[in-house]
Every structure is written in structure tokens, then in C-alpha cells.
Length: 253
Image (cartoon, rainbow, N blue to C red):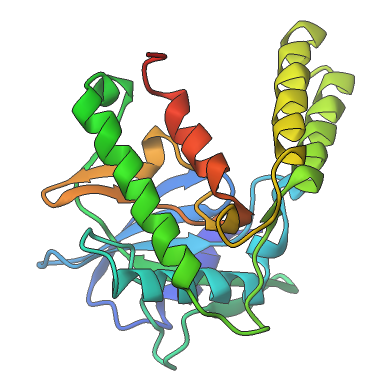
């Protein structure tokens, strides 16, 4: 598919003024930075087409994208920190769908958050680690009170999801993409994760809407503090999963 032709079709559905478009990357989505010429108005355009079919899921469906954006809208009205606010198209819709080469592509636009992408060196102090922990706690506190209808669908990051991810990695080993030497530690780590999950119950206090992809590139240092970006994999899971991800890039002590 000619994705350049596709995004040109998509931006016609928005009121951008002389947009300057920069390609960012193609991973779970195809992303572009859009800046309106002569202004500071900047946006993130996401074409919800993962780079491989193995990465497809509920999060790429129109209903799943709509649900993510619904959460972001609610979070933006609650958070004291900058949030990637969804931008509606000319029809007032949060999700724009176009057909290219007989294939439907779902797209969304978010307001750009200005700041610096964080790195491991940013979390060498106890103060910064504590701040990250507080922000994760605030996000989960909001999730506990977040109300949604029956049409709200997002991935579930439970044991079945972990086992599915392990199966995909095992396929990579079979195809020679991952060596057996590299796969074994992954297999052992996934086993530890599922064992820990088996010991947790799904309750109001332990299970709810989580970010599910907390790492350096999804943390932005802004003038108002640390902001979470990229809720593309967000869904329902154990709150402890977000905490564990955050703990991975902090000092052991």
C-alpha cells in the first residue's frame, strides 16, 4: 500500500492550515508529525496499521481506537499534566477511515506534547523515581473511577495475552529471527510473570485500565512534569503490570 498517498487523503479530513508533514516511524502504527505552517499548532497523525500482522489486535479496530480516544478525552479533563488530546475531523469524528487499494485504514489525530523524551539517566535519583511512581498511581486512581459503556473495547493484558506474546516470540525462534540462547531468558521471564499473575485476583483494586507500555520513549519531560504518551496498547490488566514496567528502568535499590 502507498501510505504516502493514504496520509494525503487523511489530512483532507481535517482543518489543517498549510500542514508540514514529517514521517516518524512505522511500528504498531504509522506515525507522522504535522505542523501548521506559520504557527506552533502541532499534531500527531496515527495510521493504525502495524508493521506486521502479528501486531494486529483489538487496538487496531475502529471500535478499539474509538475507546482509546474516549479514555484520553476523559483523562485530559482530569489530569494536571499535558495529555495527547484527540482531535476530531471535519465531521466531528475522532476516528477517520479511508479506503486505499480496497483496504480500510483507520486513522486518528492527537495534539502534540512538547518536551524531551526521557532516558535511563533521568531515573537515577530517588526523587524522579518517586515522581514516576506517583504519576502511575494517579493514572490508576483515575482508571478506577473511569466509566464506560458496553461498546468500550480494548485488549486484555492477562495470562492469555502473555502466553500469546510468548508464542509469537517462539515462532521467531523457529524462524531463526531469535536465537535459542536469546529466547530462553525470555521464556523464563514470561514464566515468572504468569506465575505472579496466577497469584493475583481480578478485583477493583488490582485490575483495571492500564497504559501497558510504560518505557522511556513513552515518557515526556514537559515544563509541567512527566507526561505519558502512546496509549496505543492500553487496555485492561493488572495495575501491577504498569508498576513493574516502570520499575524496570530504575535502580535495583
